[in-house]
Image (cartoon, rainbow, N blue to C red; front, top):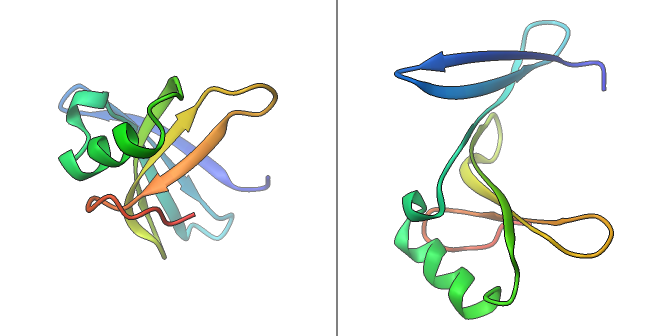
Length: 92
């Protein structure tokens, strides 16, 4: 998409950071286990998405959205991504 991507580790945790061609930072992502999600998000998933199988969870620090969690649910066709703030609020 014309942007640049950097992969690195800090304290054994893998990260990916995206940058615009001019060097402006866009976001940084790292994988998260379900057990490490904030309790409010786990509760929201149990209440509203319990029938969905999770394929990936990422913690994202975004230049304009701030910190949120991107949970990808498996479904036919394209998987469904749901973005959550730490308090369980859905932002997409």
